[in-house]
Every structure is written in structure tokens, then in C-alpha cells.
Image (cartoon, rainbow, N blue to C red; front, side):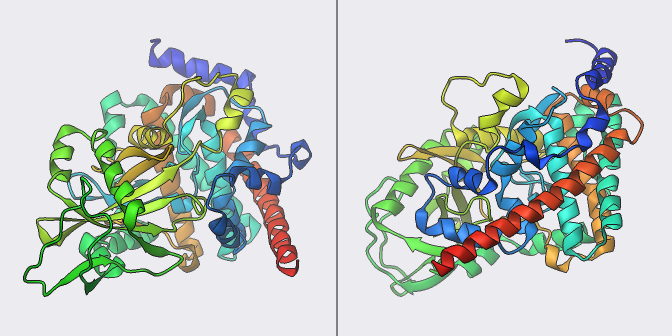
Length: 460
């Protein structure tokens, strides 16, 4: 491997492949496929009854549309030139995909926490998506475009300057780097306070209820213990049903989800398997989550460890190919492996590559030919709420977004190469801000088209 100085100079040379100023261009005329058709193609294989629910969530606002339109932006980005500087992408970099969660040592950490779209691709694709999300979030708070530009520029300046810092650090310092000013950033401080309250016991109260005990149709499976009468007076705690958000499932489907945990256990480190083995599966529910994931299969498993006051909730979430997968080869010339990729494993490995600390129960499994990622559900998790976000807080938050995204890219990519390309001037920042403003306009047009299509469907 060449030295850091040589890789820095190589990054500078990449400007000949794509000038930094060229990142500012966005021409909708280059789009040859309608956005609604791109969305429809990505919805194939999803649960039909929930596809409309997904589109209704996207129709709520331009930002809501943006959250669910990764396949559209992936297509659009592939039409543009790129730097040829690849790293592990989050894939769905936006302001609500940063959040708090519990690290393996129990302390709260703050990082990118959604990797459904993760893939290796040009580093600037993540940067452009995050910048656009900040513009849309700023417009949602009522900011004028001049201030929206300031928000995007602050994010990009922070990203660029932090990448320069990472390029100078010892490798292990980059791997361990922590953002220490989070308690001083008002919106992040609020997120951390919410996360402190999002305990497993809080989830126990919010997601379950006590009912009369019945014989489970899943009884007798490897992971379903036989229930016996005891001092609980013939009652049991199970998931409450609150459709469409949460629906309890039983019978063979519940048994199948529980059996899938055997395959999942094999993906954990040995010491974590030991801890998981001390929990017993009790109940299963189907949960509707997020925006982009609506329509995919998502199950929750309620488990009990050392007594009823020791709950563990696992999320068994279906994963399909990244929205970027169809375009990586065409856009970059990098041929994807012909081997079948386990989509849950793709998500887990991307998450582990970019995060400083990851959920200790992060793993993957399969059911009925479908791939799933497994993680803890709601264990001290919290993210920013845009409807209560003050404009001044968004400026603070933009800097955090820049620092954390740069850290993830530096961990999973080549900071020297990226720093060399970005340089010391604001040329890249200005160009990507120009793109973000234009693409936010495009997102608003696409959103209106979606809203109009839903109205037509309603009338029909």
C-alpha cells in the first residue's frame, strides 16, 4: 500500500477526472425514467397492503418523500460523473438517520444508525444526499434559501476540514475517534435525554400487555418454551396489537421467526451468543417502521432473561438489495461480484465498518428465501424530530452531521485520498451546496407528482 502522502496526491489528481466545481450540476433532462416508475420498481416484492401506506408517508412532506426515495436519487446520482474515490456508504445519509443508541458497554453513543442502503460507492454520493436532506429540513423549519445555503455550507466545511484532520491522524486514533462536544449541541443533547429514557423496561410497558394465558400454536418449537402454571395467576405478557403499527402474530409464522434466531446466533461473537442464550423467546409481532422500509417484513421478538423485569426486544428486519446496487457498475465501472449477497450480512458489515461501536446483538438470518438483519429494538434509541427543530439548532446540528459522516467515511475508506481531493478551499463545498439546493427543488417537484398521483388513485 502506498503512503499517506502519495494517496493524498492521488486524491488531488482525481480532480482531473471530475473537477470539484462540476459537482454543482443537476439537470433533470438527463433523467430518462420517471421517478414514480423508479419507486414502483423498487416496491416489487413488498407486502401489497402496505405499499400505499409507504406512499402516504412519503406524501406527507418533501422531506418525507426524500426519506423513501433512495432509488430515485441513486438513479439520478449515477447519471452524473463521480470522483472514482470509493468507500463504504451509509447509502441513506439524511438528518434523521443519525441518532443515539446504547453501545456494548452500556454508554450512549451517537452515530449514523440506519444502513439499509449501505454499499461501496463514490464517497460524494453520501455527502450530496446529506447536504440535500439538510436543505429540505431547513426549508421545513421555514428558513429562507439564503439560510438553507448556510446550513449546507457549514455541513460541508465541517466534513472537509474533519477529513483533513483524519488524514493526519494515526490509523487507530481514527478508528477510536469520538465526538466529544455532543452534550453542547442543543438538538443532540435533547436526543440523548430521550434515549436515556428509552430503556428495555420502557419498551416492555409500551409494546406489551398482560393477558389470560393461552396455549401457543408455536409451542414445541426449538425456541418456544412450554408454558406452565405458576404464581402469575394464569396470565402472560405478550405484544399488544395496535395495527397497522404493531400486530401480534402467532402460529406457524411466530414459530418460524423464533426458529430463525438459531441461524442468527451463528453470526454473533461467541461471548454474545452466550448472553443471548440466557434469554428465552416469548412472543412475536409484526411492526411497521420508518418510511423507506414500509412494506418489507419486520418482526419483533420479545424475550425474557433473568426474570420478567429483564426483557430483550430483537428486531428481525427484512433487507433487500441497496437502492444503489443497479447503478454501481454503470456509474463506476466496478463490476459487482456474481456471488449472491446476503442482504442482512451486507447491512451488518457496512454498519460495523462505519460505526465506532455497534449494537452487541447485531447479526443476520434468513427465512423463506428472504434475508434479514437482526438488532435490538429501541434499546436507548432516539433521533431528531424535525417538527420541533429550531432553525438555530439546525445550524449546530449540521456541523455534527459533517463530523460524524466524515468519521464514518474515514473509518471505512481512505481519508488521505478523500482529503487530497477535497483540498483546503471551499470549491467542493460551494458546488455541492449548489447541487443540494437544485436537488431539493427537484425533490419538491417529485413530491408534488407523487401527491398528485395519490389524488388520482383516490378519485378512481
